[in-house]
Length: 239
Length: 345
Image (cartoon, chains in turn cyan, brown):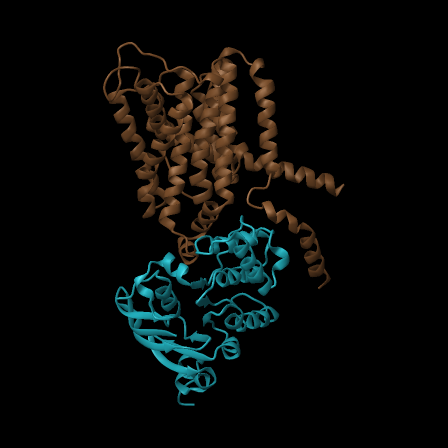
């Protein structure tokens, strides 16, 4: 359960988020909107890279904004980036291990077990010892996903995880995202431009437009909403 | 599909390797140990007195360059204060010996630790800035040390905090390095220990944190890395290693002179680390040789040693334009190509 209350962010006079208030409770929640709608800004507020002018975010009864960025990660906030951040000269396992280093997972065997579980889940179990530089785009995305899944994640933020992937890879990614809640017990917030991906994975969806909440509700209903179609799908409201 | 299966099976046979994955003896490490062993056994008796001294000094600055490489290759940060930190380590070591007379190794570690703290302080602005501005701040730290030490000189057995005497008392060499030959072996062993210590850091938690910070600070923070702590740790480690180099220099010479540690030397050593190659130990050895042996060699064949600066400048241009991993990177890449071709045949 995430309660976002009156969150506003402005960048030099441009309101990136305007008094956003919404309660998110489903296991996978989509965030959609046209370019510049404030999607990534919202994720950056979650991560702590952007400090909102006002407002609060409470997640599972914790005040998220009171913590520093790295403390949020330790608390259980996970994040993937629009441009993937796999380190080329670390092995796949070390890329994931880097995430666990800062977490209070003490025993070595437990850490190795979690790395193995995450890599198996994203089907990279045979690549653990390969360097990041040896991976293709899809595998790099999967390493980044595996990183978000170790160490008891509570909230996983995915920023366009499907960008640059082929169709069959997007299908695999879809299945992977769908299983996160059940396998790792985390809630997923997903930004994507691929409406099919959102429709297939997200139970409810937030629609942002110019920093404001345009619509929020069950994904199927939201995607039929005329205002959403007008703003996001580029279909004239008059039609 | 079949390819995937093959990959899985080959992985399962390789699984036991994981048990000592934190510090496997890789081929580069082995190569380092073997070549140093050869160097220690074979080279010292072949050198004359001058070149023994030159090589001791080269190895000492290889150690100092190891610290620069931690910041440059691992964190992507530029520090132009390394030779000044060598001076700090030397100063503390000398002061410690004159005050306490404890064994050299104790004084060396004390000097290194204090140099590490000073390095961390100079690096504090790195928490907020990087690139040119950080480089300028560290350079000012180096200039500050130059001014201080030119004013006060190095301790040479006198009274008081500064310990200046009219006639210098020389600090003795460590027990295991009394002759020049033995001292060369001694500094080589310490250099290997320093390289291995850095390597240990690189392969464990700090190394992974550094890699993420280098990738992007946002990525590191999102992975729970305390960016400030691990940057400070990088600077402390670089300063610690500089301090070791300073102590060895003090032990080799017995006294130190302020003219050895101008800020310009810090810039030169940094530039040569880029030329030699900051990404592996071979590059650091080359850095040490360029810094100390190249000018001596030029002098020896009757050319003004200052010509080395021209060569260094050309080398730096070469490195910046065509060889981001330095001469060492090019050599290793060449070797890789050669072995590939041989296997292909």
